[in-house]
Length: 343
Image (cartoon, rainbow, N blue to C red):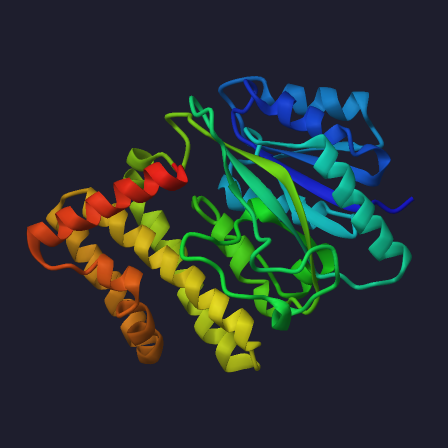
């Protein structure tokens, strides 16, 4: 029987927490295939745990072993091996809410049984920040009508701090393959490309207002940790430039729905701000120059796009002049981080 959903679980030295992730996914039963991708783990028994699950649940779990290629290549491996109608990525230190999971599978089943081609299924995610009693929820009830087939035309405006992440999306597998999605190897933050690149190909969407994905934040070595992000800033910039290139090329190739276009510009705006703030937080002349170069890259690539982003609220915020301007930018970032809890 064909699977409704393929879930890729990228694992790299994940033995300490991957079982919790996989156990929550197993509650989907035979409707799901779980692709546990061991991305060249060497420091623990990640590979053995993946094999144990595959042996215990042979009709649900598949263990994929590969040389280390980074998070993006692990997602690529999952997509290459996916046989399900829909495709989801769940990182090995995260997990899913089982009740919401059942609801989403029910929606997927109804779409397949009615021969309805659904491109993108959207749900909420929760910032499971360690040590925080109040958990921030990213929901979209102000943007999308709930539990009905919709298009970009039905989407309302996103709030300034509201955006769609990998945690929010379940794509139709064939759409991802048709749009030629391949994530770069040995690069962090490629989950932004995973969400961003397919968006212009999406014609039909469906939003379910459930808190499905639980996004864990708290490990010191986590990619969204501020110090880690600054240390990997060149990879953040690389992803940022790929998204700029992709957006500019997409606009050249075919007509883009105005609502999709507006959201993708917002997404780029957020990415430019994140890169700029991390470069400012590093407090090095070298990284201040990298900030200038990134914005120059955008300007050369598409002047009109540069004008829109440079003189937006976020663009103005990261271009306040001098030491005092950088201090104001840092303060604004710290307030936003406390309010949203994003790293």
